[in-house]
Image (cartoon, rainbow, N blue to C red; front, side, top):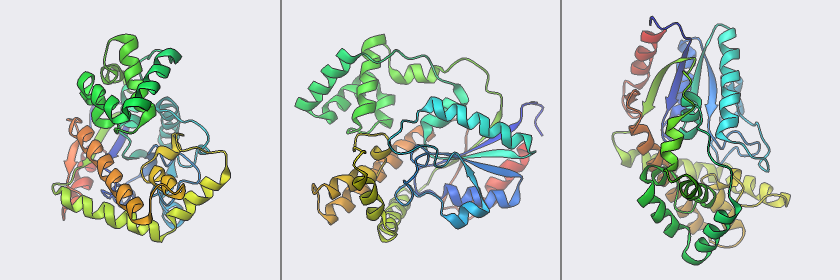
Length: 312
């Protein structure tokens, strides 16, 4: 038991397809925990199969807070998540239990624990110029520019993530400082929870890649394209919305628009998921206070349980 009087929160973090949900549910069977999702895709209703949302049987046994908060047409930010997560954690604590926050969205974890720095408002003139440059040079060229000026931001933003690339470059132009530096700065307030961080980091990247491919194929078999087809048919959604920039959804949308055949769609979806996992692993390695666990290790659950017992 720690002498720190703040209530305990557990952060279970890891790249996509590393087994976070299964471990969280197993820990909940053994300890007085309640689960809170930390995933920028799972906040959206209708993003189920392709976002690997826990199925109805799992959710009935192990409810997750912060699922299905928004329609895909609506925005949801890291600031929104922080407000919602702190409220959910307070409710869990009031019930005499410990919040276990599980997911792979590093920006949400960071915003929750460190707060958010005040960033400048959007500058339409700069955004318009950046968009014009991207139309000529391509977003990967602007990503290369960002990598020179803010390597940390470039490591977590994909080369075709237009909105986030545009914002990162815009902030640099407005402030003269890297976006990552300003986001890391946080609000300066002390986080009202003591935190145990558990990071699932595979020792063998090949095993993770194999799981990603198997899971993508399982999603296809479970009706992923039908799910995206229903979103596509609504008529009020566009592929540049934050919800539809989620890994897999953008590639599926392009396929339904006729831009790719089925085999190319599958290859691009798996490749994009592997790139996401790479960015998540890079971020996790910067969490130096996390207890690292190999998701493929035979002692994963006992080791996670032992770490938790030390904090309870």
